[in-house]
Image (cartoon, rainbow, N blue to C red; front, side, top):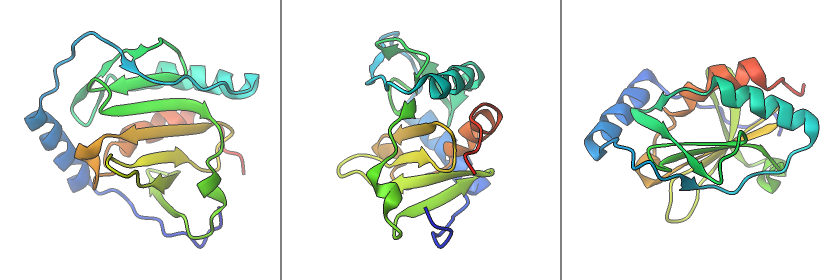
Length: 161
């Protein structure tokens, strides 16, 4: 992606709003794993993804981490699938679009893709493995959850530039 993209920073208020919204919506876990397709990255990317998996937080936006189905070190979910992370996904085609929207959260760049009838999907930019975070409709206008992933991504997935 080119540097001409707009970068918006999620505010602390956005993160707090996400926590309040999640608390109001309920945060219980059912024990069942959210169905999540498992990516098939190359060995080097998979190693970074396994390291990321070990660093992921137990709670994001007030939602507890839950299992995924099938179980994999390349996937994670919070709030029974309200937030889903997949590591080692292919480079999104939208990343080649000079008009694509991007944001930055605590030093990690993310491509923004709005999904029809659902919340947004974000994919890391300028990293050796692509990390995708999908949010459900309750996060349609909230990038706050990305802040929880910035530290783990920065520590485990090396930059590509």
